[in-house]
Image (cartoon, rainbow, N blue to C red; front, top):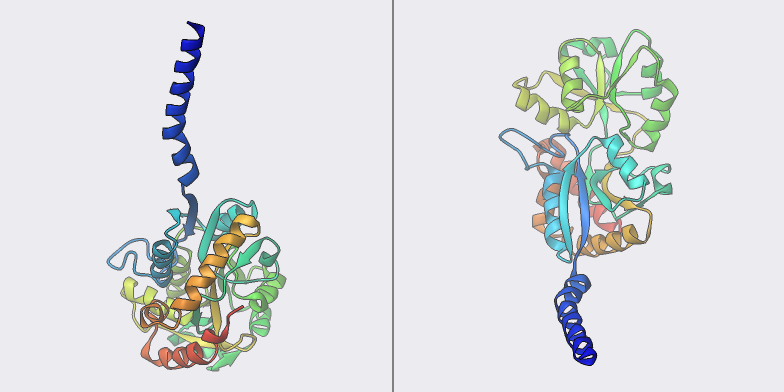
Length: 290
C-alpha cells in the first residue's frame, strides 16, 4: 500500500515538473525601457505622439531584440539615471556619454548624430547678444545682466556640463525641474522671463511649431562645442547590461547604413541642417564602431 502511494506521488511530481520546468527554462528576460518627455526626441502626446526620433529607435530595438520581453515607462532624466545607477534591468535610448556616467553605465556605439546644443534667443533680442553668430558660453554666464535657462540633471555634453557646473546656483541661471521641461523653458523665453536657453536648434523649431510660435527664435553657436553631438543608448554597468549592449551593437552595425534607420535619425531636422548631418553621418557617424 505504501509502495503504491509512493509510486503515485512520484507520478504526480513528474507531471507537475513537465508543466513547470519548460516555462522556467524558456521564460524571456525583460528590458524596461525608460523614456522622458522631450519632444521631438520623445513625443508623448498630441498629433505627433510616438513619432519622435528616439520613439522610432526604441521601437526598432524592441522589434529586433526578440529574445527579450519589453516594457516602457516614462520617467524624468534624473530618475532614469538613478535606476541605471542602482543596477536595475533598465535601459535608455537618447542619452549622452559623460565621464561620470561611464562609471556606472555601459554604452552602445552611437545611435544618432545631430548638430550640437546652441544658445537659443528671441530674434528681437539679438542685439543683447551683440548680433554674433558664435558666442563663448563661459563669457555669457559671467554676464549678470542676461539670465539663462537649463534643465535639471540633463547632460549637455561633458564640455558644456563642466562650464554649467561652475555657475549653477547663481541668480542668472535658472534650472527647470518640472514636467515638459524643454517646452516650459521655451515658454519662459518667449514670455521674456529668461533671456536665453541652451537647446538643440531642431528641438526648438519643433516646439515652436506645436506652440504655434514659428520663427520667433534663432540660435547662436557655442564656441566650446564640437561640430556634432551623438546620441547613445545606455544600460547598467553589470553583466546583464553588458549582454544587452553587445546585442544592440550587433543590431546597430547592421542597421545604421540602411535608409530605414537613417530616417529615424534625420526626422524633424530642417533641410538646411540635413546637409551637414548627412555629411557627418557618412564621414563620421558610420565609422564610430567602438
